[in-house]
Amino acid sequence: MSPKNDRPVVPRRSFIFAPGLKPEMYPKALASGADIVCVELEDGIAPKDKDAARHNAMALFAEPQADDGVERIVRINSLREAFGVSDVQAVLATDTPPPALMLPKVRTPDEIVWLDNLLTERGHDTRLHIIIETNAGLEAVHDIARASPRIDALFFGGVDMAAELRCQNAWGPLLYARSRVVHAAASIGVDAIDVPFLDLEDPEGMEREARLALDLGFSGKGSIHPKQIQILNGVFTPDQARVDHARRVIQAFEEADTGLVVIDGKLIEKPVLREMHRVLAIFERVSA
Image 1 (tube, rainbow, N blue to C red):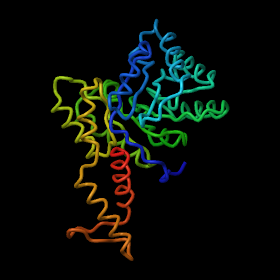
Image 2 (cartoon, rainbow, N blue to C red):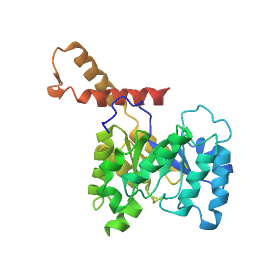
Image 3 (cartoon, one colour):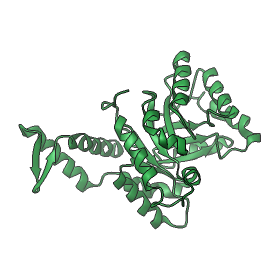
Image 4 (cartoon, rainbow, N blue to C red):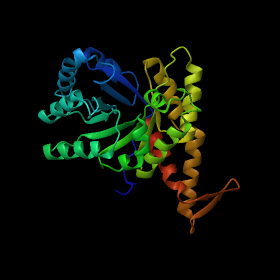
């Protein structure tokens, strides 16, 4: 599958989970300021509560959703587990499916192809967000990324990945894994979203790691509490200097007859244009 360069640019600076077992928390999550709200059916739900959480999640999306700019996702269980199969069956059974599904612990592209085929057969337009958090998934990440045109983002799952790689859950040891996920996401023109920062008492550390993720190519980062969202949105929102630079680059290429321009003494080639347009699109969407 070839990369898609015409995908709409959607801000995905931050996301937060809302437990499927507590639907009363869903409106609070939607009002938290996060760009993505994910209803949780996987790790955050005990096996004895899976059925109730699944029923609650499907009921949430039976109601019309506001056009408020918040992306709504349901994280189902692994497609290699009975709970995940039951989640898929529930999605296929409803006429009001979630707009998107987050797939955890993906190991091979076959999982994505199987689900895509089922959704297509049912007539659902449901999008897919893929978590890369296994060693097998990291090995096959480029094939996984190209397994379906429904994929809108790749998420990096650092906790499980560190356990699988037998390394520390820290920036340095996981840099290679993060880089592979960013590379795969960029190769098909979708967003890469970094793992949440787990220490609520260290906002400076979270901001520092978020800026490292931004520099590496991530579009956003997860949160485990609403108080982290404002910082994350601030990090991943283009600042005025970057927006002004993007406008200058775009204008320079519009006025140039070549694929090269010089701005402030620096040579800039035409492939940079796509990122400049993305910066402006995110800024305009967030400002609106």
